[in-house]
Length: 498
Ligand code: NAD
Image (cartoon, rainbow, N blue to C red; front, side):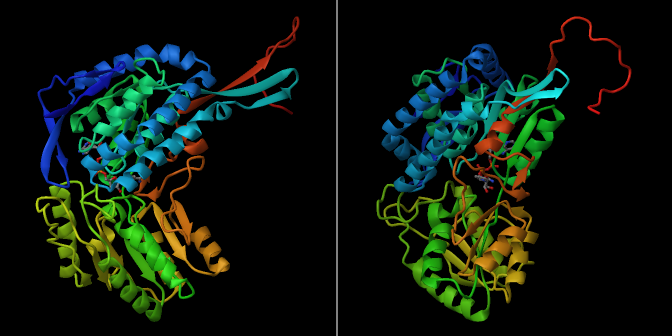
């Protein structure tokens, strides 16, 4: 059976704990490999390797570090097919979508290739008599990233590409559900010319995460996953004196105005709600049509469109989406569908009990659609993270906009309209971090920044873009003067520039 190891100091390292997690093929429900789960000591070994690599890597000039990232980009492109197949076999997303996962990671690598430009500090000549002030951005030191199952290529790249380009060394703790692509990325990064110890990986569960959060030599931690764990990581990391950013769950709304192009809206939302079996933090699982006519037209068209979707194994080139990641997750999603029924929502399409011929043991769920969902329902308030679209009807834009603004999550939101004025007002007022205007999945490009509000993100600095550089560096400000001879008095008052 295939075994996924740790990766420390430039090489694969077998686990010592004797504890393993199963890696499933969600298409078949069969165990296809196992992953070593690290002890606190094994995390400590990765930290030692990252510490040893730090002086050389942080002192290397930024352009030379960037060249490693250029090489890495090329190697990932050359290995795109292999990576996408591996990703798809452990996650269950279709191959084309798996390539998208790798590509969105590469976008951040491309951004990181230009980071030397953003590491330049600020300079003020003559801030006082003979006094100049300058600032510089310096790496934090040894850093770490803890990532979720749903983007096993993109999210590790969000973190390590920016962190190492800034001169840090890094320890990745990927999801134990699909760790093979992260391991390959670490190997390719070494092949690209990085010295051993710059990028390490430990696999594991809570024990490894706690070891990272408590280790005194890890200075910054980035986390992406569900909100309760994000909150825990944020609190624990802060308690141990670390800089922490922790992205959590989501429940993104799509507001459909009466003047929207309904054909286009239905095409957009069917992909955003059901693509990747709804396992995206920027999926669009809540549609909010404004006005009864809009709602009736939307629900009817969406039922027709959703019924046409082809659910298939992840290597089926005609499948719109594949299985969800695990049996436990399928059960969870199906229990939310039951909850919606029990709460009185109108279940128009029921994807429970979906069986794919020849793959009866796979974790498939058909598309589900609820109408007349109410804001007070628990199935609306919580994240389902599956192929389930909930329609909440609203009478006005004001009422519609209140829903995402008052929701506990605030990751993404979209508005579909032909009115620039309505869209502009909405974008300005809505209490959500990423907004799409006639764009159903508004994931910002890599040189902008990614991050939600409220329980979708703890901490105040986003992923990638200039914000990412701020997160992975600390600023130092130098005030200097070069007096010639004696410049006079001692001063006992705070210097001012009067
Ligand atoms: P998860 O929270 O279960 O796991 C994320 C990471 O935390 C994994 O590495 C896991 O090993 C670790 N972990 C799990 N339980 C832990 C515990 N008790 N203590 C310490 N660490 C623990 O999330 P997931 O199921 O892998 O991913 C799906 C979630 O991630 C969804 O909620 C989704 O919305 C969210 N997500 C958010 C974003 C974002 O940017 N906001 C992006 C992608 C996914």
